[in-house]
Image (tube, rainbow, N blue to C red; front, side, top):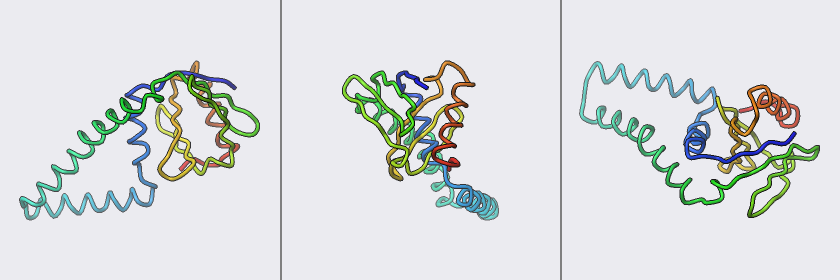
Length: 155
């Protein structure tokens, strides 16, 4: 299986949100905390509560996308064409400036978003593979099946 494409700014911003997505247990705890915060704020509105809400909205709606776009523009290799070949022993990435094999054993975990896949060699570093690298949804899902076979369930 061989696929290729160019990562765009929109892909990189979306990847940051998939990367920031918590595990289900932490998401449930976060949801409970958000509900408790809304309830407390409704019972006793305060300037601090309003400030926290504005900060959270600003962080996720303004700062995270801005930072991701800035990082994308600074990291020139992200905007270069890349091809990825699925091999028996791993994924072979090839760019104009370099190429190399990422063995399956070097992928610590992976995440699946609506239109992208993140492959993690460590907890905070990932390879980004957008769905538009594939000729269609069927090929994308076929690649997801290969990942499940070699890496197990997505986190």
